[in-house]
Length: 285
Image (cartoon, rainbow, N blue to C red; front, side):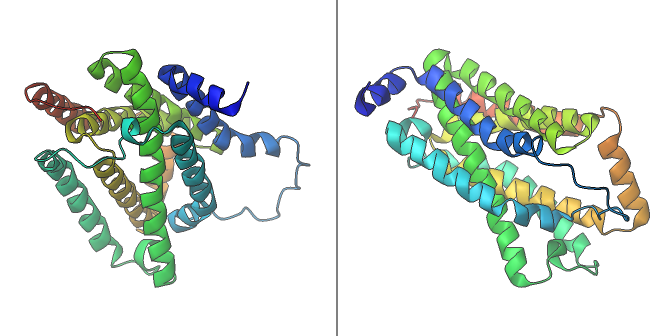
C-alpha cells in the first residue's frame, strides 16, 4: 500500500487512528523501561543515591519532551489534522472561561513561589537562572504534548466516534488512566491512583474548555502553567525541612487518599463550561 493511500485510510478512521497514536505515545514511555530489563543489573551502591529533586526531574524530561513535540506535531502534519486537533484561533468571546482556572493556577503558583523564597536552594531548586528558565520551558512543553495528544488527537477521534460530550468524557478517562504508567517509574500505588483521579477530572475540564474555545492553544497554556505550579509546590515541600519531606514521602508511599478538592473543582467547572457551551451557538474546530 502506498503512503498516500495509507494516510487516507488513517484519516477516514479517526477513532481507530487516535487509539493507534495513543499506543505509540505509550510506547514512547514504555520503551526505556523495557530496555532496562535487558541491561545487566548494576551492583548496589554502598550508600543510597539521593532522591532526585523536582528541578532534576524536570531537566531530565527536556530531551523526552523535545522528541514528543517532534513526534506528535509530525503525526498531525502527516494526517493534515491541524483544524480537527485544534490548531485554530479561539472562538471570539470564549476566552473568558479560561480566566477562573487561570486565576486559581496563578494564586497557587504565587503561593508556592512565596514559600520557596525562604529556601536555601533557590527558585524551584535551580542553581542558576538558566536552570529555572529551562524548568519553566519543560513545564510548558508538557502542556503542549499532553494537550496535543489527549485534547487534540484523541479528542478529535473520540468526537468523530461518539457524541461531543461523550467524546469529552472518554478522552478524559483515557487521559487519567494513562497516568498509571507512572507506576513503572517506581511511584507509589496510592499516590498514582490519586493522580489518576485528579488527571481525569482536570482532563474533563480541559476538554470542556477545548469545546468552548474551539482551540487547543488556551488549554496548552493553562495545562503548562498548572504543571509548573505543581512542580513548584513539590519543590517547596522537598525543601521545607525533614518533617515536611517525611510527610510527603509517606503520602507518596501510602494508601489511596482522594480529597474533594482534587476532584470537585475540575469536575464542577468542566460541567459548568459544558452547560454554557450547550446554550450557545458554537462551531467545533
